[in-house]
Length: 304
Image (cartoon, rainbow, N blue to C red; front, side, top):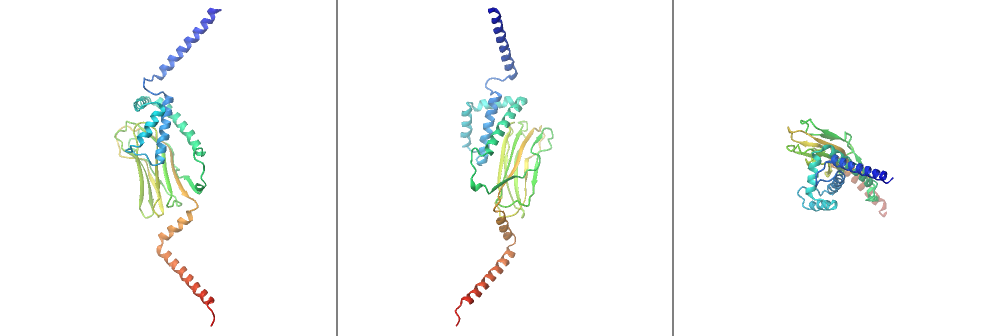
């Protein structure tokens, strides 16, 4: 009986040992490299950090203050820049593992986005209720370019008669470019073109390190002019002969505007666009107002 029990325990031990070695062999991860779960958690927090900096217009390649934020992120996860770099190189060379990691990252970011939209972090301010937001992007939200090296631009153009001055526009997307595109100088561009031909624009450079990054561009229609169109490019750069490997996802173009001020803004623009007609109308109104004042003063004058 004891021999049988011992044999059963020995078999279980051998089976567990076999499973351990199989799992270790499957991962085949060198020392000093984060596992897939650790890498996914770090990249999720990295995207949250960069999204926060973008939202506050703080992200700048030359901004030394950003270093403190990134160092705090490394400290939170108990790793160093060298460990992250080694992990990034390892998973870049193993695209299937990297794809699994980013599926986990996107899942975590989607759950976080859902919590934010439920106003968990920021309660609704009554003054913000008049602020309206709408997504103007009607095209496909996902692009994948692998072999078409001649295609180095993804241009968009949106026209809408309701676009007004003081509108705020935010273009956001996820983009990943392979390090093989070292000669590819890329940027994301957004422009506001007004009816008189004037243009306001904003752009940001993109990284080529195989990390799926979120980019956000913010632009306000500051001129007191009617807007002809919103245009730009999700992919803007010089042509190259290197192998192209670009992935774009979750494209949005959010317009934020004051719904209650729409009529008053429209009246102001009409005055600016037709100053002579407005002056004539104002002159006629003042003339009738003066005439009424004279008539009223005569009525109220004492009779002699």
